[in-house]
Image (cartoon, rainbow, N blue to C red; front, side, top):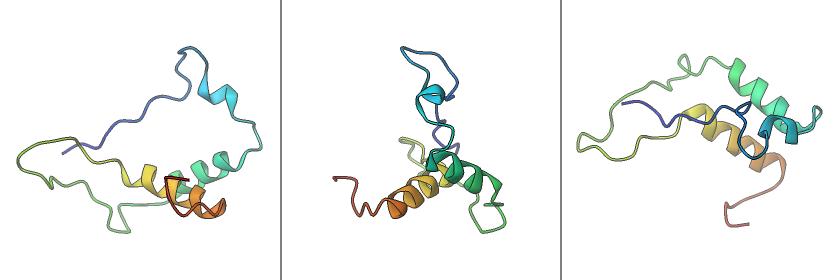
Length: 80
């Protein structure tokens, strides 16, 4: 089963997301760090968890980026 595909950040909509983030923002460091990790070697493999279908899972690298960003900004919940 495939993961949910994220949007291309350089895609032009009403505004370009890539241009709205400063060059020295911490999210760029997090993105580079997580993308450099060999997640397959750490056990993050693609597998079909729901035989009945449903929405695909988010890719582990996307979730790891969100977790690291929340940790760095002391955000304990997505409701904050």
